[in-house]
Every structure is written in structure tokens, then in C-alpha cells.
Image 1 (cartoon, rainbow, N blue to C red):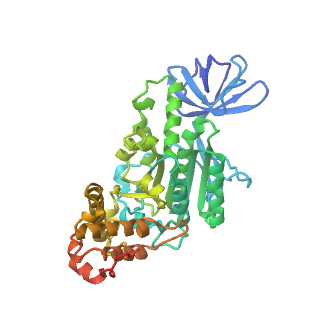
Image 2: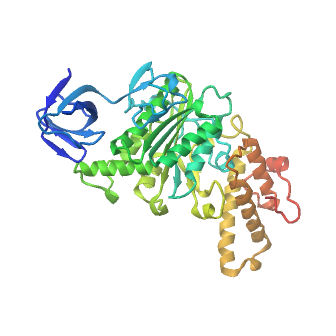
Length: 465
């Protein structure tokens, strides 16, 4: 039953408080009619008996305590969905902002999603190609995985997101069943225009669903945006059997909106002022990735977050690391040196890549090659530390080889053009070419059969890059 209430008890910031409300539901949508005939939307965010707190999306300015009419809609926020959302640009709450008219829905879905029975989940296998050597070879993205990117303010994570959207594909499909859902939260107008223009110019907008929440939009919309994006992804994946890659940026803006919202409700803050339930709140988003029985589709997530002061122990990256299956860390030193994408190899990992690469998935030598590149690059850091103490000229010949390998590895393997789309075969071949700088006896993570097949010593001088 739908109820309408006249007047309100209290207004506090963007919150409207009603009393004597019958049978309210958490997350229930409300419609607020003002004296001038205008209508605003909100949702119930707190219930204390018959007293409810409503978050007004458009703010409470101009709302009267006496004459305002509040209509409880009897349902949570629902997103209108059809397959024609592909190629559309939507606002943070799913309203079209591209000038092409409304979405004619096949159905409407609760943006909070439906819990997935863990028993019905399928273990993620097979990889998604991004065309970026450092990711595809060493931090492989697996279908159904959640793999965040940890970045910092002013670094090139926006460019990396655009490149992944433009180049991402699955190996065993011609592209018809692959889509990208892109959600931007709290971005400035110029950044939003950059994303939209980049996708249009690359000719990939037809396979992308964009959700844009701008910095001057209400914070409650910022909290809703990732849920709308994931609802659209689940619809395409589990009702149309598509493989959907969800990119969400910036999760730090989302967490700060949660902090502001929690503070406005008077909740007791946790670490650094964030609400104590931030872990479970983030988990409610990240755990919507995966594959389920009965559907050939998948939802894969790449959340992007900026670490305040590049602090990986900050609550947002810290909690994200607990929930997700690895991380891609961007390095400011590499970024300042002009290495794009500035992927820090050693602190990055993909916990699921071991089961989605190798014979039958990528190439038989992929796993051992990745282990060898990791191990060799770790020794590069040791050689650099020693060189900073005694000088490079005093290093042993093998340490000098590792320094040479490190320069070549960063200059030609990690570093890659913004428009350069490398196949996995090219990336693996480049990895073997770089290992040619090192003596054969240093390759202790690879079987001799693979060394005989792929290893070629570098020419004198060894500057393979």
C-alpha cells in the first residue's frame, strides 16, 4: 500500500525526518512534493520504529516542514533495463544524459542486487586480454575476478582506464558477447568529457554503458552510481549471456561520500572518520563479480581508487585488498620517469591467474615465464640497492647484467604506448627476449624444455630494449 504524509518533523542538511510512518522499508523510494509543485526524490536510509530518515537526492533547500507532501513508493530504487543501454551515457542514477531519449525497459531491477548463493558460483577461469604487457603477462585478469587498480592523485589511471576499455577483449569470442560498463564517481566535467570523447573517438562506445556522476552532483547519487552500474552488468551477463567488464573510478570518492553521509546521520565514525561498516559496504559491491551456474556470462570488476598520500595502508585500499583477489599498483617514480603505464610489478599480483593461464588457456610457458620475470626483477631491486651504496662500477658482472635487464624491462616491457595494443603472444615473446640479457644459468624458475624452445642470448651489449 502506498502512503502519503503531510509535513515533516525535522530537516538536517540533506536529511528529511518524518514521524508516525506506518510500515516503512529500508531503502524505500519516496517522492517529495513541494509547495511550488516541484517534485524531488529520496530514499529511506534509517528507521527507528515509526521514525524514518529520508535522504533527499536534490537537497532540502526550499522544503517546508508544514506543507511538504511525502509519498512512500513501496519499492527500492529500480533501474530500467534493456539491451539498448549499450552505447548509452547515463547519469549517476541511470537517467539518460546523452540526448537520445529515455530507455524503454524490458524489466526493472533493484539496484542493490540479489545475493548470489556461494554454491552456485563457478570458479573463474580464462583470461580477459587488455593488450597491456605488464597486466596480461604478470597480473593476468581472469573472467569473473575483481582486480582493483591502486593509484595516486595526478597519476595516469584515467588514461589506463580508457586504454583498457578500448582494448579489452576475450580470446575465444569475436566481440559480440563482450561489453564494458564504465562508472565514474565524483569526477570533474573535463574528466567526464575526456572519458566520453575517448570512447567515441576509439569507436568502442557501442559496447560501453557509461554512468557519470559529476563532482557537483549530490553525494547520495555517488553512493547509488556503482550499484546502478553493477545492476546493468548483471543484467547483461546473466540474462543475455555476455562477458561484462565493470570499471569503477574512483572508489575513494565513493568511500568519502559514504563518510560524509554517515556523518550527516550522526553515526559513530571508525578509522579516519569512515563508517565502521565500510568493509561490508565495499564487499556488497565487489562481491557482485563472478560467474554463476546456468549462465555463460560473467561479471569482472576493475575498481580504480586513488590512495591519499600514496598510502597503501589507508582504509580504502586496505579494506579493498582484503575483499578483492589481488591488485594492480601504480608507481609514482615510474610515472615521473615517463613510463606509461606505471605499473609497479613487485607489489602487484593476481591471485586467480594461476588457474586461468597456461596450457589450454594462454600458452604453456606463461606461468613459468611470469615467475621468472618476477624473480629477475626482484633481483634488479637488490642490485640497485647495492649500487646506491658501493656504486655501479663496483658491482659484480652478474649484478650489472641485472641492472641492464631492469632498464630494458622498464623501458620496453612495462612502458607501452597509449595506443599500443599488444597481443599476449607479443608480450610473452618480448618477455623471453628480455630474459636473453641474463645468462642461461640465472633462469631458475623455468623448465629446460621451455628454455631450449624460447631462450635466445642477447647480442653483445644486451640493450634489447
